[in-house]
Length: 123
Image (cartoon, rainbow, N blue to C red):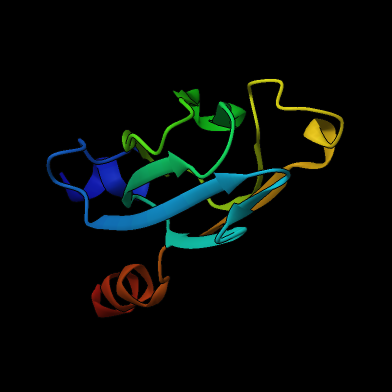
């Protein structure tokens, strides 16, 4: 199991730590705009629209959901399996400012400390 994690295998969603966020979508922004998680975290987004229909997509993780108008909460879950900075985009046309409706997901790399400690402990 340790070797699989070391070579980059993703933990199953049931095993991953959970980072949950409430996201409000409105013309033409997400609130909050920026989300930060750790590599391997299961990300849970509880989203609602405060005006018209929107969508939220993080293409690199194949995560996408429609957010209906009316305030109904929609949940989107995915595993942040790779460190980096990724665009969060509105995936449903919501008016003139649609293309500017963006956010950012920052996935911090796993702490190298544990891996280095194991390597240093070898005879």
